[in-house]
Length: 221
Image 1: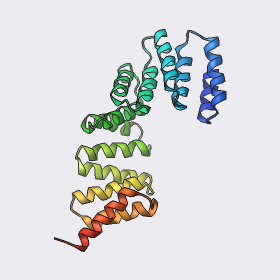
Image 2: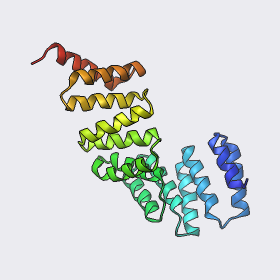
Image 3: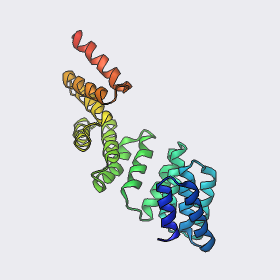
């Protein structure tokens, strides 16, 4: 196993000091290889040392022009700091340079969602969902983008798919409940709000939804 792979293994196990040691050693032995700087930058993003991380990504980019993973790392850096417009630009550059993975489409979609642009986010989240059909978070985020784009029937189907992957997904149950409210089926909405609360008793949105639906059913107009 080479130094980068050893560092990634340590990083995955949250063994930060050991990961730092391996990435440092790789950089010392291969100072012109941008991959070492990219992985060190990713590690620094992971531990929220954003200014240092940016220096490592910039160093990597000074060593090569076609480095989609460096732009992906920069995108994550800006996303973590809430700078979603800048994150969008970096993720788009990563895709432009050939990075064709579910994670980059997920992050690009979520960056646009955080800028309240669900219809722009939709194709990226759809692409991510197609590339990784078993990833629950990706499938749920795609459902949210459909809901925020006011595509209620499609959102309902997507949240049902999330439930098939994980029937204890409280947020999916809550959002199915919301789609039933749009369909003017409050009894079915209440069922899913109750399911969300059974899974997660402190689910505030489901609690509020349950209360409002019960008031509606107790006092029909």
